[in-house]
Amino acid sequence: MDFRRRVSLLALGAWVLLLSGCFREELTIVLNKDGSGEYHIRWAYDIDPIMRPIAEKPRKAVTAKEMSEGPVKCTLYKVYEDTKDPALTWTEAVYKFDNLAEALPILESRIKIGPRYTFRGDRLVIFLDKEPSEYDGTSSEKMRGEARLTMKLPAPPESANGKVTGNEVTWTFSGEDMQRILKSDYGTEILRASIPASAIKLDLRPRLVSTLENPAEPDPRDMDEIWEAGDEPPVPAFTARIPVLNADRDEYNAKVSVLLPLKDIKLPMSYEGLTIKSFVVNGEKVPCRLNGQTSGFFDGKNFKSSYGTDTYATDAHEMLAELQFQLKSPWAKKADRLEAKVQVLTPVKTGEYSLECRSLEKPYPHLIIPGESGGVIAITQIDRRTEGSIRFTSNISQAYLCRAYLDTCYGLRYEGAIGYLPDIYRDGFAEIEKLDPQSKANGKRCYSALVRLPKIPEPPFQIVFQLITESERTECTIIMEDVKFYEN
Image 1 (cartoon, rainbow, N blue to C red):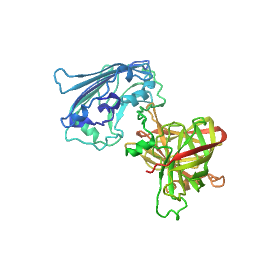
Image 2: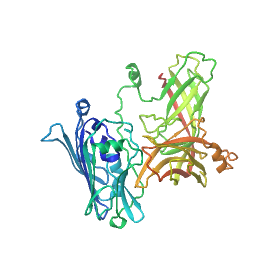
Image 3: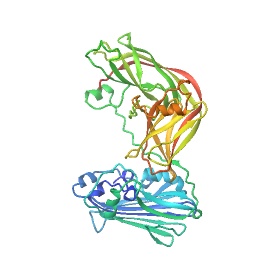
Image 4: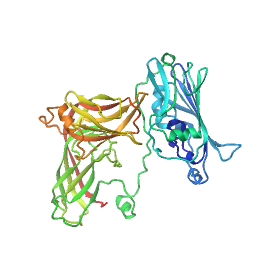
């Protein structure tokens, strides 16, 4: 079992293969006064015979060195069969760090295991509550096994649901306990303990959780070979849907997604006024309009359509645009020329603006931004399911809005993916105009957007927006020539 893909029993009560088998898991956490420490992890699983063909597929061996990242060093990683019970496969790992606060984002993204830490008054609280998980809704008639968490702390702990011995506290969960947690509501307490805040040195300001990415290997075939083989290609320079009927009744009868080359433009960039100046097919200039947003922020990673869906390009310097144009001949195979103009805003200064959420219910908070990029951001919906999302309405130019984050109270920051919604989502437009009475007079346009997040924890937490406060503006021309259509 690949440790980097594993969801721990002790993490959030979400289990995959173990639901139909037997599990044993032990996590020992050692924390020192200076904030350094170790995570010792040992687990075994006995997969149900029905699941074994899946679980026993060959996997690339993982070394301790590969499991190290930044301030977290993996000093031991091994997988072996139980000498007394061949059906059990054991995995052991040891992670060491000099600063728990700096290690938490790595531990969160890489091993997904362990409790949360937060300061409340004069106490450091160690806790774990039921959180949303991709395995919510799974169930099992019976879970067999045991999970144990032991914490060795720099001071005697207090705990209402753990067994305390000196400076140690231990929680033990049976299969029935696990099943009960799995079926419980979000926010249900799983474990809790505390020590004096003065007993340990920790700076728990939110730090960005890194993401483990596994990009697909590039396909060596050209686009024609991919299509002829009937395979699904990545988005090429153009993908077009070309109808044949009633072409003369609709001036914009063909749709195309195009990846605009930005090789001469420094990233990240903000942009405004993206327009199509010329679109030539079969030697004839045809009417063409841009669907979706004409302004926004692009950093080479956020390949988003106007509906917030992912579209991955083969080059970071390619930005997705959606066009609709007139096509008189259904036999057209390529565009002779595309010319686009755009105002590029290179960020000189940025600022972060945050609002606090103390409840998942309405009324939601709003944020009034001063200065050049000023306007209003109002939260209109919080969806806490597996992949959490926060919908907001704003009249701040999309070119000024760079990124969105969620800051937890336990030292983690999650980055969100912003996707802009079509105008049918008009949530909060009237509220924005009340909060910013000069909005219409100043020509500001309201829009709705969605911030997709890995998870949304129990309140309180902060939603943070990064905005451009000062930029340099230049006009750029983008030209593409002799580009084939690929029908989808």
